[in-house]
Image (cartoon, rainbow, N blue to C red; front, side, top):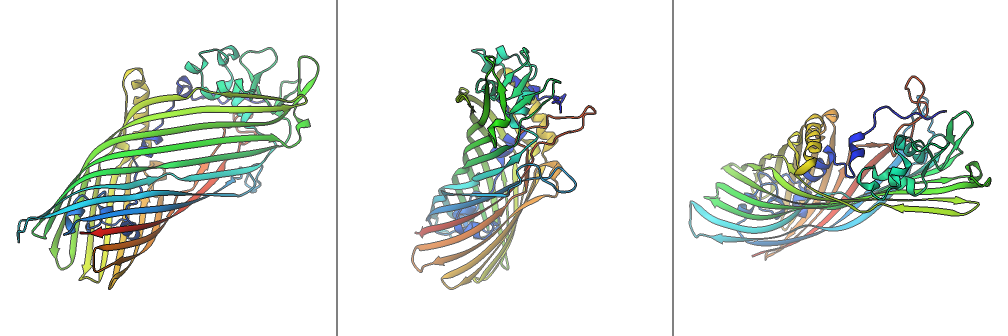
Length: 531
């Protein structure tokens, strides 16, 4: 089957070495709150409750509820698990690639919460009764993920797709000393590592190292190959909060935060192809001899660091009869983003043995992302000192995100900002929590639902369920434990693009598509002291 390039190429992405997308803004802006073990155990439904240092990220007025000073530290473990398997492109369910269902997991340690609040009693019986000042660090997102997929393929190849993508680029340009200034980085690396090469005396048409060329011009995969896809993601987002709270007559609690955000994100992705029988992949050399494709490995690494600032204001009202009403608003956050990325790869041949390796320079780019406004509402009911029920709603319109930069890249970001408005819209978060006190012990539970901010996934939710226990001594010490399970939406991922088409433009040979499912368990232990 002759390979034909799809007529629309991502020319904008190819024109620059970095390629930010609307989804980067979502990565830097979305929250999945953690905090203390108590707040996590109750689903982080704390907008109307307060009194817990994990709640201050959600509602600044929460610091004023506690009539004492306190210090907490919360170590946590995350157990992340993923499964990956190919998706059948045929109605009969047959699977021509990634037929094995693979499971992978990883464990990571973090400190989701650490904080100190100092309460000052004004000794007044009404009006301003207490002022609270605090500094709290709470984790607001985690990115841990490990994905592994493996299977065989007899029709398409990663290197074949790369060869089609390179069509039209001169080999002399891909090999030029300044190639990384004006050519797609993956193609430069792929050409220099031997994954693709020109053929037939042409300087702008390419063939993959695992493909054979026939006299009639057809280019096909030489035989069956073993394909492996892997991805490892690490990092998290934290908010560092300077807080002030005020207790007005034990009736109205007010609070304000100045928040500093810090995010670190590392994405390491690779794709391997290996000949099951190298003799199927004969490559004729100019000297009349032959060599055989053995295996290749492609790797892409990306990391990002962000720092930003915002303000947040909140209030909690206690009208009586156990009812509590809370609300908070957060200003847009202005985040400075520093990105770094690199491509590398190798291709191995046998008879004679040869290995070609190439790595790109490390790219770096700095720009600004403005995360959107947030609003919280909460209702809670306390049954004397015996039980608590609470419910939260949080709104954030991700269609209001904006990329900003200076210089010649401003036009590129204008297009991304248009994409953001087209792709994203409001996200709705619902959080529910309950607590029952049994003397010095407490039993807690929580549930959360978060809608997708993508317009074409409207009605899709990810969820979490949590459970926890608490102990409070008669003196200053207290301890809480929580477990939370997060479930995520299914991800469909194509490691490389379709590139074999019929004359009418329909797909002749479908490339692999993976179904990736993901969940994680978090275990947190809070140690605290009141004084």
